[in-house]
Length: 436
Image: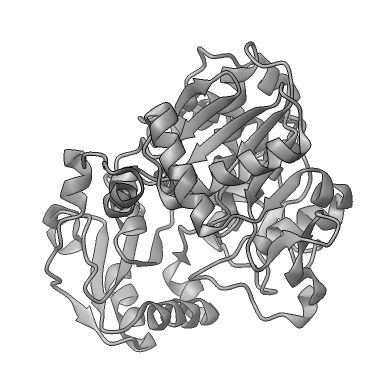
């Protein structure tokens, strides 16, 4: 598979290039250049297929020009010693749990896969790379886990002031580890601008081999398509009607990944999500992307620090216009409906749910009740462990989940060893130090 920029389909690159130099020079985001038919693989899968095996098979099918089947299997096995949870809540509702990784975040899957792909690619190219990431602790913890044991990868983690957590001293480069955690004396906006300035310096990006592990990097987004294939492998012998996935909008990464899954021949009837200011419905209750009124050529470059995958959605909709109205169903959800959904999930199914999962459930109920028949099945995508949201859940349900020991450990604050002001020169100096 090859990849093209959302701003210029003539800008064609390999997977290896798209993940190592992950920001397209024209300011766009990389997307698949074409839709591979993975139907034979999808229908071969069953409820005995492990997530790692599924990921290996689909990697081999998608990246066959660069990764052999053996290498694909090795990448997936190394990346996924953990697997999503998938459970039946009732006859028409299932839950896909993405908080089963080592840090309780859905980001564990994409970050671990991307790190494994980068490590192999860099090994073959005899190169090294440095990941630069802004974090308030969540993605930083995922990066730390994924970086352990890598020989060609290091990471500069820019922690917003007062948020450093999620790693051990042994993970730090000055103790032989792979991460350089540094507290930035500034706000999250200042940290994001700092990363934007770093990646605007093309000489620095090339010289130090800088890349990203957020969803600006297509290598982080691509494995999220595997979630939906995995869910279908568990449903295919149990469900014979329409299948919908209900998910939080977030930065539209999981939604974009789901649509890529559909393009790769995933059997699915639609994706239900909450309305946002950018992804909403028109007066006829049909999906529309408000950002699309501004042509891509008139927009600034994609933000490397805080990417929105809305541009990737627009690319899918541009090449397949009917998808916008026939596959994506934004639903308005109020805060009151969110809270009621959280309580219903607990009272009816014994499930604790964070605000985003509760919002997705409320959106699905409203959509299914309004438009579809009794034989529709909904897969509720639960992104992050409810233990991160105990106070809000307790307010809604009167009870809250226990915090597992491994998550409690990640929430313990770490005293910064390194501090910098929000200035480009300081980040460049760290990158130079890591390059040696």
